Length: 65
Image 1 (tube, one colour):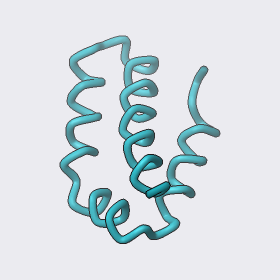
Image 2: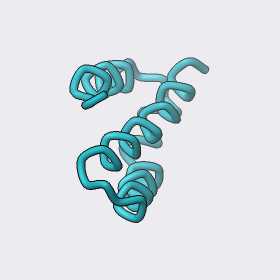
Image 3: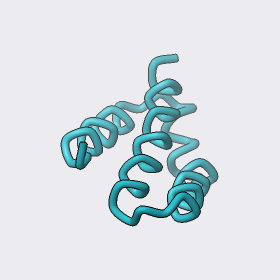
């Protein structure tokens, strides 16, 4: 269950980082949508592999907040 929450958080992080980098709501929406429908990200969240945690921590570490 935790990996599903982290997968959702990752989509939000991608959208926030894209918004901050490009100053565009449209590009942020497109980036979030592409990650949300990405087959690899969906499978990683469903199978509960720990790679989602690594990806989310890397995104948190590189976030320009």
